[in-house]
Image (cartoon, rainbow, N blue to C red; front, side, top):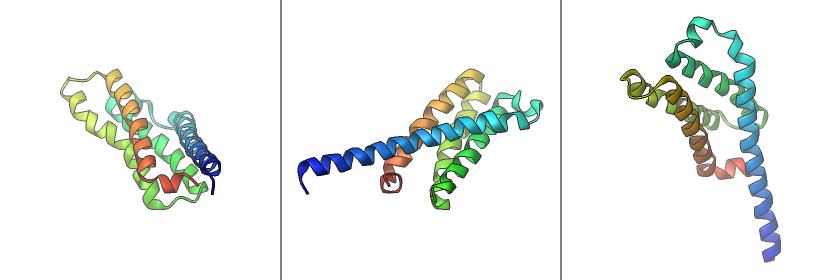
Length: 129
């Protein structure tokens, strides 16, 4: 294999990886939009519950997308954990008053997309094909 072929192969893998990441983010957005209205307002009005409800909506849609791509249940569970973990960890500072409701949501989402990317890089063989 020549250097050009290797570069092309790596470029294709990176493009597939980035495309897969974008698909998962799109599935999460679809989950928030489609499933969000199904929850009682009393739940979503409370920031802590609302954050967990949103993580659930995103995880359900992302899991469905991953099932369609024939990912294994352990990989789906890893990705769902990456989506919940930031909110669960940030609940303590929120409850202690060190983090506002907006801070909880913003920081939770930022950390979530970083953790998702970290999981994908860690398991890159799973996401490059």
